[in-house]
Length: 200
Image (tube, rainbow, N blue to C red; front, side):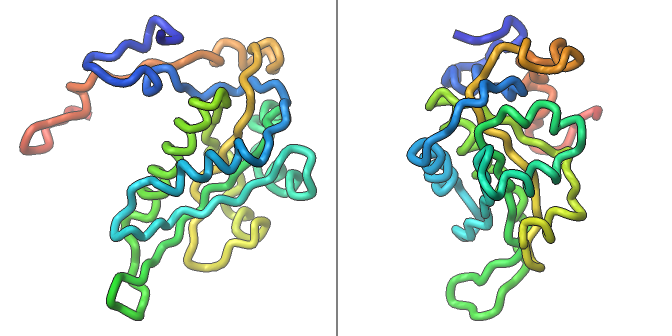
């Protein structure tokens, strides 16, 4: 069963693709290691070019010694709701790859794309286990590499909040209207046969 009237499939797909969405309201419930590492295990099996597996995940559970570092990277508006998440995760991608049979690293043009595939796998596994996720682009990208100890050759892509979903009443009031599943463009708006024929 879908969670909102504005989310209906045009073609036959598994319900999880419609039912998963990205809430901000979380209960503050603690996540155990078995569950958390199940999310990373799902990400592990994402597809990647040349099996490069460029994704890296840096995590901090709420209340841990590392939580403050990741939390401080968020912009002020995101800090207002992330404080009830169970864990914050930074998704990092490696920009180069040593291809089979070679000794020198070459640029990996699709590192962000492949990291995104791993993030999607993590998000769907979380949903299946009763947890919710939200990708966060509003953070200090300039400071993130230093704060997280990320060396040259890697890119911090997004932060990810994970938590058990709560009622929107736990959020500041100005978030309430937006705390709902969002619709998607019709399929015909983003597919074309043979050549690019999109108006936007």
